[in-house]
Length: 309
Image (cartoon, rainbow, N blue to C red):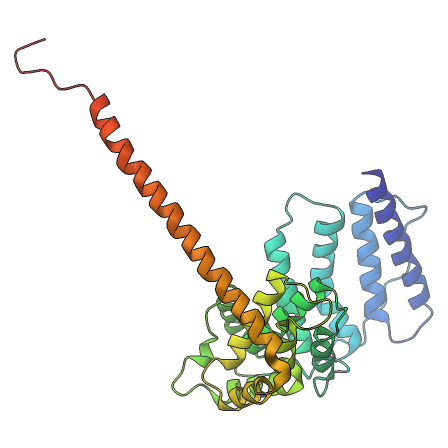
């Protein structure tokens, strides 16, 4: 508990230092105001500090610039404060599943939108997919990256026809592993098919196959990473996108793809073995119930004949 208090105190001190540094710069009014708000939140949480941050309120000048870095920072501030409260202060109201869901959604909206600063051609998404194909990539980073890329196909961040309510419904379908709504039409919407191709062309297909290649030196059969890769692959192929099928076929027809098929064989064998074990358990339980029923029937006293006590 003491180490946590020290860590949080250091975070507050770092926040104050950032606020004083930004105070000497122009064009950071919104950031400075938010820094002051965060320090006030720390004060409300009784986080110790030598002095409270005292900076005069600044009149924000970037309210109309929705694509500016400062405005993007401001939009994500509430979520940041919520995560900071839950993860550092360990509040009893923290919901890990909700935090994971929102984190995946936030990453998808950031990496999947050309309105994000420095992402006008989705170059950040390309780098994320490239990172998923790095041999020493941290498993948790790969898992979250694959999930975020899959969520992009559901949420379609740059599609003006997809409302905020639509995104919430698609996020729910994403969590329940149901296909995106636009993929089940006959035919699927063209904007959806185009987004699939765009994600695949930026490295989506390579990221899926790399994460499932058992011949890579140091490969670890991480079940969460394998599942995330399989689900992304399925989402890329939803709606029968012929271009995506051709991309997978071109890569899987090469001799270097043997690691992918080897892992699939392993997964199938494990699934078959799991089904056998489950069937064996079910038979044992059924046999135990069948043996137990006569015993229960014998232990029930016979009803008294009418007129006798």
